Amino acid sequence: MTAVPIVVRGGLARLRGAPVSAVATGLAFLVLFWEPIVTLGGDWWHHPDAGHGLLLGPLALYIAWRRGKAPGAQPQPIAGLMILIGAVLLRYLSGLAAELFTMRLSMLAGVAGLVVFVSGLRQLRHWWLTGLLLLLSVPIPAVVLNSIALPLQLKASQMGTALLEWRHVPVLLAGNVIHLPGRALFVTEACSGLRSLTALLALGVLIGGLWLRTPWSRLALVMVAIPVATALNIVRVFLTGFLSYHAGPALSDGFMHYTEGWVIFMVAFGILGSFGWLFGQVERARGRRVAA
Image (tube, rainbow, N blue to C red; front, side):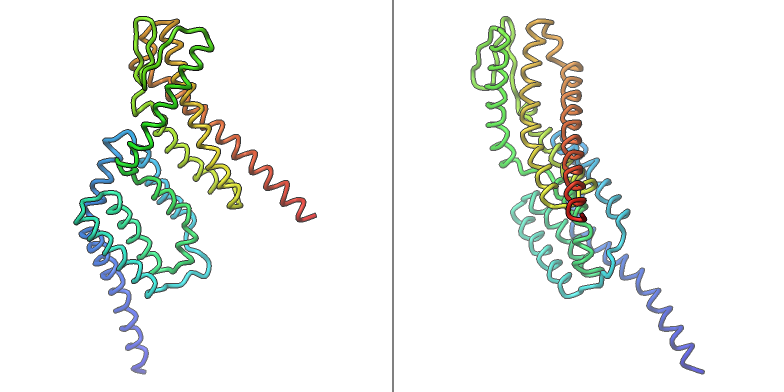
């Protein structure tokens, strides 16, 4: 007769202890990773090159919620603890070096460690799309960004100038400056195409994760995003110079310039979506052949 009250009291104690441990873990995580959380949110809000994180972050969490718990997922405390220790060490070292990128990676590693601790590696694999989207939402380090942006600026300037010459527009190229009669167009870092490339890569990962089923199709779609973003950015540089020469300089500045960029990006998104549909059709056709 006394066994039942003891069991009930033990169960109630565990129920009370679970929220307490969850709150304590959450507070410890916030204290440890508060700086990368705040600086990452600030970059998402203030810097155009990182603005896609405002969409990717919440979307990644929504996808994880929709996918739910993986079948057969079991806690792996030892593996989770090892990942957490590595994340804490990385956080400490990156804090000493004041290196934001690795500091933010340590935050993601800490989240991964908690997932493994509570639900195991199977759950982490089940949320692979969420993990990739969160990783893509972390801004590229400035050193890497600058080393990539400059070659893209020069290439966009060269190819845009070649297209203008093809359309018989008098033009002279000097580095990343395109000289037109009475006007000079500067192909700045914002016009390098890196921003649209980053966004299209994230969209490629998202479309591949939601629509496609095989790793090869997903990888092919992500690879398609690179030439699509590069080519359409060159077209944007050409259109800016062409319209500025024939219709007036107002079309290369301000609202019209930004509108042109959005139209080009929507075209790129449509092309990427078309490739995703095509790869999906190939997957289904191959599946039918295998079934037959």
